[in-house]
Image (cartoon, rainbow, N blue to C red; front, top):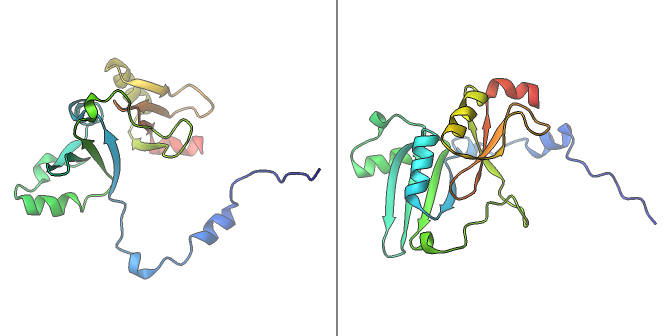
Length: 182
């Protein structure tokens, strides 16, 4: 019987070698959005706005295709343009927004969306940086948010995972304490 090689990730050098020499034509590209399918826009919007503090940047309805898009991010409401065309261009120029997609009628379906954290695994989570993980989690607990992992549970102390109304995982981290974890 042949011996199986040890399973491990890429070395630092191998990872760096995969990411060298980006094409100059991509210098102005940016990560603009992550899309999550949602069943109940009222529950999801309340969660992302009231629990996580995001701002609704723009809502787009597509009646002929029976779906709506809700773009949220960490922006000041005063900065959102009033003109629809300006607002659209502005919304799509923001970094790291969330696009919540509601396919009309899914709120009445029994089955929810797959969050990617059970078999078959795929999508994992989004991450949210906060000044103090413990203070944020205390507030989340008071608001009745579902936890996957609290900050002092498991091997990685000081970060948490919560779930949104559709079961998607959200990592709660503090940039200043990540140096102790990684």
